[in-house]
Image (cartoon, rainbow, N blue to C red; front, side, top):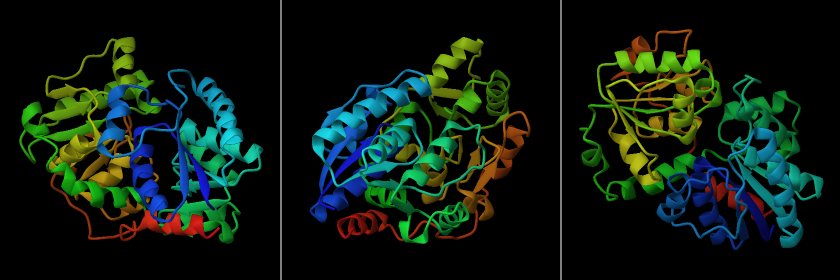
Length: 355
């Protein structure tokens, strides 16, 4: 493969693409980056490209803010035009967003091979839009880069040929190793917010299953309110909007801040006493920096972290979130290494150039 079109649209995908793009360049692969615009806020997008030292996207589609159906349909149409114009040897997609599915569908209908990074993850909750996106993308893809042995087992159980699957390790672990030291020199974000190392909880809440359900949303806020330490909460645009819709107010122990850049987020993660999140990526980053994590869901794609004692599930409304958070604080898990050795991007680039 000599030329690829990479389709991305959300913050976690920017992080993954940064390390893979660097590896692809080292292997002489020409890459055309397409930003769908799914995360269109400057704090959710532009700053990430700057901090990750990524070139600006060749194509910025500016598609975001609509429903899942609206966004996905418009993205397919726009990505299709890019693929026809660029004539790549393959299309590379990441994760489980609407941008992921749109890129895969646009490519496969044009008979262009699809590579899926972070293939094989399963929550087994079909009510999650992300679960539908990842399952459909996996079954459309020609190259499936699985981060763990568990992911490979899921793919094989669904009848996907072993010849399509590659155990790559996790590209976010690559990013944690590469950018972790740089984050230390990115500015004193803790002092700016007014918290001390290991004296706060970092929280993120953005998934529709939590923010669009007033009962679940209220249960999360009640749990936060009863937790002893201050909680730093970068407020996602969806979260801010739904607080207004439901007439909810943030508890007094929450320090609400605007979404921060990648390096600032790394510093907040590394120095937290606990991380509470419904994000898949933040769960892993908590583990990379050896910080206990509570996942505000009834399931997780990263089951190995629950088994190792680093992650603790607390489904809103069905469990005592405050009790789980207090029990998890300071409770580290076993020493495990399920995500490879930090060479996932190189494995992926080498596989692409040889196929």
